[in-house]
Length: 577
Image 1 (cartoon, rainbow, N blue to C red):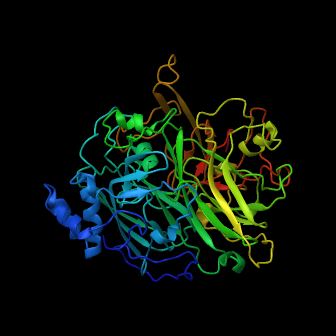
Image 2: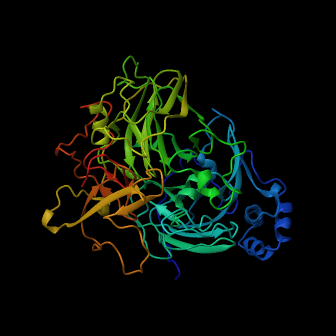
Image 3: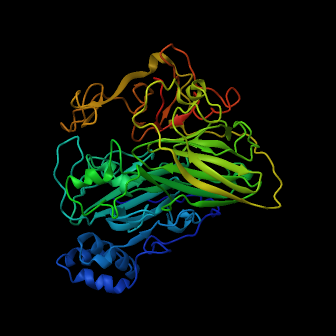
């Protein structure tokens, strides 16, 4: 069916924006596409020349060169044709994602994502991994409310690794796409995660409509093929989606702030989930580290290793942070620089704007610890009032041997005590460095403000209980063999494993337009995410019926999660409504 395009109002150009046409987007620095015409010719001469020819017919010659190159890399026509992504420099300047933005035009975004292979060079090892469009992190999609999106996904991976047992890692080269956080249709050709895009040239055309009342904010896309999601996503297949603020919805002082997107990926190589050993069950062509990588995990920010983020003294900045990882969480602080830390001058402070693309009712809000949990996005404003280098790092979950922290402090953030270890608890690591340079900017505070919200995220706190549809969601993860706690894990909801038994078989149904009250239990082990619809935190109580979550004013380590906040990806220790 054809799209009818209505005119939309467009906000002024963002300060971070370098506009690129969808047909010409490529990595600008350091990679990959030397002699593009030779690659195109090489690809056309391979046994899969018909696939490459089809890609070349998609549009402009630059797109021909890009897609043919990526296809060539994926089908193994030449080792030299595999793009190289250099993340070996530790502490190099942050790469701005403005260089990789694709913007809608006249109410429509046309974009092609090609799944292929690239060589990632880190400070300690090198390996091949799956990526979109030859880059680590696909293009950032910049959209307006009311836009239509036509997205073609092409899978040029080899037709191998397509075996395995259901509900275990399997079919690692089959894929699809989930637009995580968007309030759009979940039916094909929209955000259906049951679509199968097979390797060897399979393709699918997704179509999405961004509602006129869609809340602006930071979302993302990633694979969601059952059995391959974690390997593909943690290996480098992800990208940001921005729904721009309509004009005049933010105060002028907020609109004027510099804005930067941070995409953080945690690649696990040791522990309960291991990219290399999981891939090795099928073959060692991908994710096989040379020399062997012996660290537990490797953290990348915008495709770089522990980058330096340069900011000016006294200047507020907006950061939209995506933790695009499927394993350990980050419990992050600015080392020795926040006011709640004993002996700190309080040189740096951050305040919260939004969870998962859902603006807070009152913002910006003071908080202490910044948790970055699986698949979450957090929008903050940050400033530092002293010149110097400040380390942004993740501390150990539940630590009581630093900064004078106690279990009560952690309960004020987490929702309960930390007496039991969390399997997905934390990764202690440096994330990045804030390098603060001198300026003549005068330090000024930001005023708290509010704005109207779309009806689908209107507060439910005063909703009539008798009209609600109440459903229980009890999440469980346990070893398949009770005598082997390190063996295969079984994931369940309400004591049921995931099963594709047909389109009419489901755990429960709820009416469109109704208010649904979910009781989450066990959402302390793995993030809970309901596709399409965000959820509002109504209560969070511990085993004694006490609500341990605190505001920043009550406990300056806390303030991150509060009753009334909206999330689409929620991880809390206490059972919640």
